[in-house]
Amino acid sequence: MKTTEKQQRKEVQKVFAQEKLDNFRASLPMEEKSFLALFYYLEKALQRVPCDHTLRYTTLFLTENKVSDPEKVVDWLTSNGGYCEVLYNVEEQFDYLENTSYEAPLKLNKLEKNILEKKKKIKEFPSEFDFPFSSAPAPWKLSQKEVQGKQEYLLQLGKGFNACIVMLRLDFPKEKLAEEGYFLSQWKTFTEIKSPKGLEQEILEVEAYQYIVVKSKEYTPVIIFVLPKENKRGYLVVQTELSRYRNDLKEIERLLKE
Image (cartoon, rainbow, N blue to C red; front, side):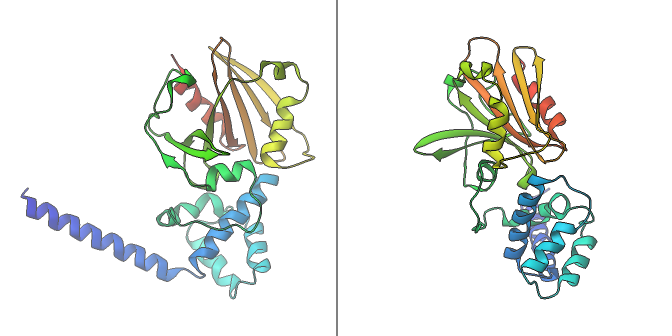
């Protein structure tokens, strides 16, 4: 195929994609920034209770924010795949707003900061982490951000608020292994849920690593600590969700295979 024909096809595809986006934006029943606020609101709500497969929290958001035509918004959401909680079905349609920040009026907890704060994509992390991998194989993405003057490295699997985020850490304090309730308290620190119900931890032994899974059937967040059995510096802290953590565990196991 000649270069001019390829260029013409690309131009046609570009025009088609733009028209599709324009039509989508024209169909929105409320402002785009309101959708970003809705996604943030749902993330906060679903950290406390699992999705009940309704539009309950979406309706609460529309009421609390005095959206002019909530019924129209609900109709639009259901016609665009939002039959369950909107966060899981509609949010990805707003990927074109990926670089648009939402200034949340509430203080962010650690889980939300890992998702919402600006991060820089990188190809490799420092060798001092001594993991059996130094870059992020697909479908993982590797990034870094500055936290209190220090660089923090993160792996991400998936998009949006329900992505799996893996924090790369150094030198786990081994004395904490003998401290009763330490990992449960870390879950509380990450989520800022002070008195959770049914919080439990499970210990899994997988090859050269020990996985400490902290979760509750009453809440969405799951925190997993991946600690080396040998004398290595690098360890992982994983933030994921009740509905996906088992699959994320399998992906992490693949990452850590020697």
